[in-house]
Length: 137
Image (cartoon, rainbow, N blue to C red; front, side, top):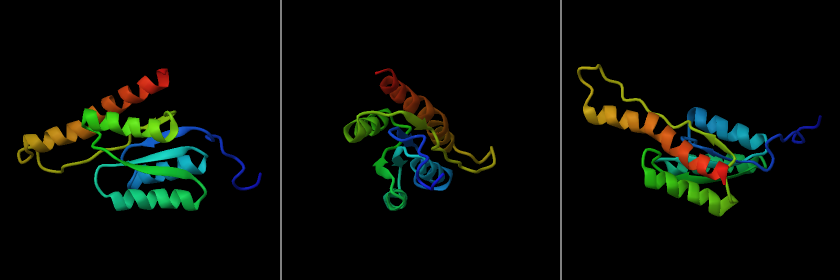
């Protein structure tokens, strides 16, 4: 089979949270290589997200960067709305965003704990709920 002909995700629209670096960036690129259009979410670091989008475009894929704090309900709703404007829907959600605040238990602040729980857990609920509303539509 010739390179580029096997695109099992052609026509699919994917969102990768935390897609501007690390595992998320690799997932975004792999989805695009498989033919999906990819929304690359970032909380901060617009330049990194746009670099991933440029890498995808250079490999003949389609992507756009979308800023959102995935622990914030309104920002998650706006992020999904941006996908609706761009591609009229979502087919794939990769809940990849996560962070770590390393500290011994006795030194960890409640604010640090709350931030970790919001990004690592609450965001999973928020993004999945909003995506599922679109899946059902």
